[in-house]
Figure 1 (cartoon, rainbow, N blue to C red):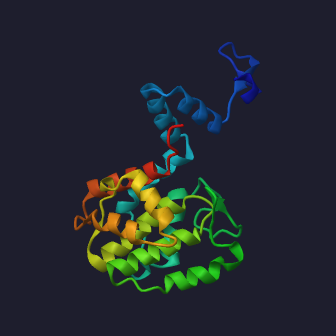
Figure 2 (cartoon, one colour):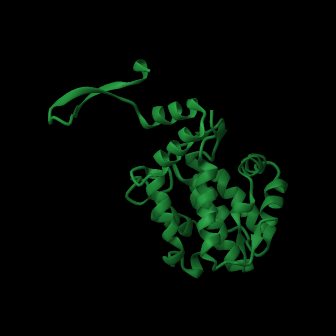
Figure 3 (spheres, rainbow, N blue to C red):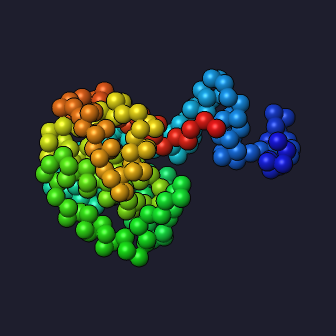
Length: 231
């Protein structure tokens, strides 16, 4: 335990500063996961999504998107709209909120679009048709492969996808109907075959596009998809 901590001088109840063992956020999460009981998981959920964390604060901001009228009708499906969504959720939390990345990134062994080709690829993706269900999902899959931001791509892009569905089909996704493991596996496979993600999304479509409960559950599940599984 001590080897994973750092000592910082913190103010005690007597007003004096003493060297105190502290641990990073990643260390706290790893420690909680290693305990393997329900109380630890409840604590971890609170810790990650309290108002003092980036995830917690961005999630709170995401809840208000339904009332923001952020994306104008003419911009739905554009890179600009996706940037607006990202900037709204992560503004004030990341200094790159809403900004297209200029560095090449990897995640879980997956290499996303190289930075030097990203702007060109985003122009191509933006021009993709979005009049049918299949076309919209194909566009979503390509945007996921592009991964235009340094962080927060999944959460922003799922909202972007729903905005396109609402405009073009008068429907949206009830994300609460899509299992996390099935979704993540389908998205991993979508780089070569989008059949699985299309099947999952098709089975979760609803015409309740103005239902606040559907939207709020969608945000909850979107953030849940991004949580690391218990070790």
